Length: 353
Ligand SMILES: [Zn+2]
Ligand SMILES: [Zn+2]
Image 1 (cartoon, rainbow, N blue to C red):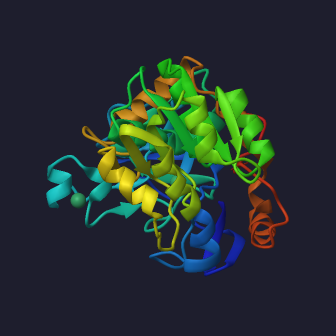
Image 2: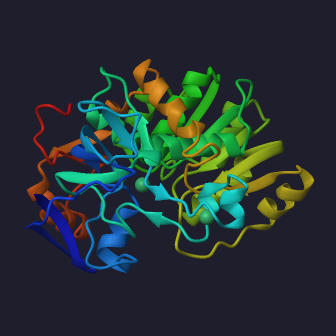
């Protein structure tokens, strides 16, 4: 089959490799769509992977074309997406059902081969059914959407909350769509990019803030009638936004950090003060899993997509063939491409949209 292999850091090659064979507990998927995750970019360009060489790619969906003898719930032709984490099921955190914190996990696309390829054998345990009329490329975005839902579950978000979201990448935009689906009345999107803010508006943001031109914190307090938001999310991993996420929260507010910054954070006096005076809860959100694995983050997203309450087509900025991938990563490295979700179609674009 054709695949994109990462041989070493910042070195992708479009190559021929052996077709995978499903083990007893695995389903063989014909990969119809696979997205580039924000985490793939530093993994491929800067840090490398836990295992090299490796086929990256962990946001994917495909068609069942075979399975091992212990698989009973799938048949040829079914449509599936997959959760990329393979938890150990033995550590303290797996036993508690908090799989995102597993201490000995494997992962499709970083520790096991992933889906930048025409076929992949995936554990039955990891598969999620997607409905007949859910496009494969939508299925390939369940991962970022499930990350957004996990952050909402961390903060126990309810319909009566007011929210702001910093960072309109895929997870941020899904957060906006999910907030709308929940019936939340005040949904504030913050970004530095006008196009992404326009998409946020289309996704259901009631207010958008261009934070290079406007004072985001002042605007958020204005839009919430001087109360601040009850839940503030940072999906950007940018320290200034992490700071503003705290300053945006009102009394008893919850602040959720999801975006990875790869750097430190210092807080102004006002932010530190607010944490205590307003009794803020500042919490982290990591990955997308809960009990039973892979969790209601995954099943709920699949249902919301089937019901057309989440619309990934607003996020997909590029639709490309697999052989274009090495080139695309060069463009990403040189910042020659403005993108949101870049989608690849290892078995052709026609059947996947
Ligand atoms: Zn991802
Ligand atoms: Zn574990």
